[in-house]
Length: 198
Image (tube, rainbow, N blue to C red):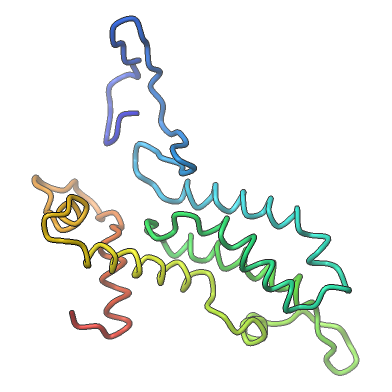
């Protein structure tokens, strides 16, 4: 896979007797990697996998025998980890955050069900769902895991390779147009929202 802006025609890489096909994206260690480093592709893949996990557990989530507390525990231990695998490295756009929230609310609506209001059944509002859930929503969970990952890097020794790469400055000019979202910018924004100075 060639990373970056490429205008040349696609050519396979030949080394000795081996030919390697040139691709735009591939799966590596369970993560989707693409040539433009677009995390929306990874978020889409995670949503599909989490949706599969949800449908496997759908009979348990619909069951009237199982308590809501157990259903919530099923979501937090079996579905949410599938959805947020590798989320500490995500750079989430507003659209990605919105789609993650929609998926979480779909499951919470199934767990907590509708409510009787003035003799009629109605769907619970988002605020009511999160009051019943009484946990961090999925976007906040991803941001906190990203901050935890950043703290892990900051505690490393100064000569640690991963820390040096994180703190290094890239050379050259950036391309014209709006800059892409960077992981570091997301961490800085989250830290300022929390009110941390250092």
